[in-house]
Amino acid sequence: AQSVAQPEDQVNVAEGNPLTVKCTYSVSGNPYLFWYVQYPNRGLQFLLKYITGDNLVKGSYGFEAEFNKSQTSFHLKKPSALVSDSALYFCAVSFGGSARQLTFGSGTQLTVLP
Amino acid sequence: GAGVSQSPRYKVAKRGQDVALRCDPISGHVSLFWYQQALGQGPEFLTYFQNEAQLDKSGLPSDRFFAERPEGSVSTLKIQRTQQEDSAVYLCASSPSGQGNQPQHFGDGTRLSIL
Image 1 (cartoon, each protein chain N blue to C red):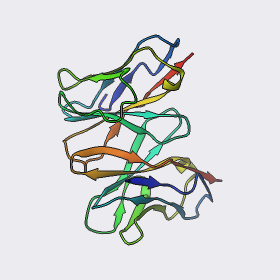
Image 2: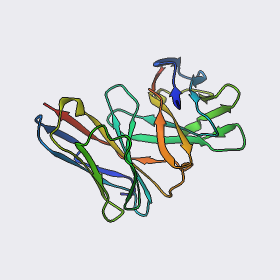
Image 3: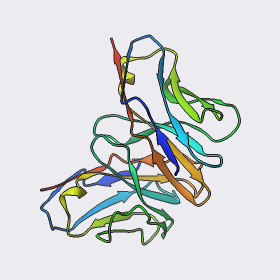
Image 4: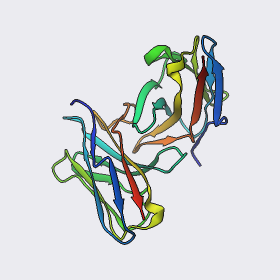
């Protein structure tokens, strides 16, 4: 079965430190990978995507993610965290073909401590 | 506004009542999706439209759930004879094309509470 896993429910990091939010997936074929952020009582905002090409993709607000096919991972990173980055982060996969919908991980709550 | 708009933002209904949730996608977007997000969970797919055609409704949890997009723009998600387990946030998303590699743009959702 195709699935997405975010192994950490909660990540805490000090402001100014680098952050990593982990995501792994299980799928046959070549998936399209996305990261979204959700603030309280709001919808999801697109951060970045990996479709093909360079394994390191850069997105909004200084975030980047590294696609690793051998480890089936797509971890979200930022070199220097801000308090305003505190939010709920979702990794998502689209498996292409006729299945255009996103399959989401369970989410990781990121807290950046001042 | 240029974003996806959903109404109402909050809906409270008694068990057994019917509800209708509206989604106005970004103008010109071909694809429209509905997702259900339970508290503390990631969104789960319900159904997908390409223009007015409902191409996938495999995520609808029961025949009490019905969605339509008759003119290929605004969509309505209807839930009949609501149950307490229907309480969730219902998110609508749209994307410019029918390609799975396009990011989806989400509305702020409708929070449905069934008493």
